[in-house]
Image (tube, rainbow over all chains, first blue to last red):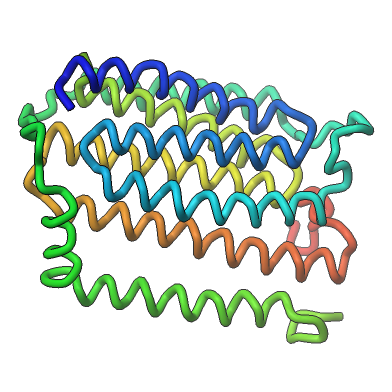
Length: 170
Length: 102
């Protein structure tokens, strides 16, 4: 994609991503919040694709759609007011949280704008997937295996923590 | 046109929205959602650096995979803890979990 096409995709999709992310914490319906989070991360994956990381964008879309659908189930199961019909307020320290978020946003944006970043631009048709494949199967193989093992151990650990009559039951 | 500071700016706002979720929500699952957004912002940063600062550094792309894995692991452990808490306390509200409060 050339620079104009990237800009045409990035600005509207980025703005929509921020809006959906914000609505995750504004809506009172929990199922809707889960689906909004899925929408925010799906829009982020479109940004990845626009920024010439097609493989990462597609992978993100696939992984997050599965994860967010599971999250919607959990929300409906464990939230006190999953449909948002009782008008429960599920926030605390609202003012201080908003203030902290605004300060954080302004501070990080100021650093992003004020820093003198190096300027090197990717050629339009970069071999992203091929290079990433060589990276995973070559230099970063050990780290990749470590990530895979971590997933396995987390699956086992998650089940052990959650199982009935387990170590933490009382 | 899009440049690195623009991408980082979007990521900063996304990170702040996630931080608001972590700090301001009372339910554990909503807190997990906030963390997901913060990690999403981290990945956007890395992709931005990859595109505009170090296009030849494929190890950066690999780091996105690691953060994506971290998102899945964090959600798995979080959901496990939510189930364990709900089983013993019948609630997933973090305001009710005060055993370690001094």
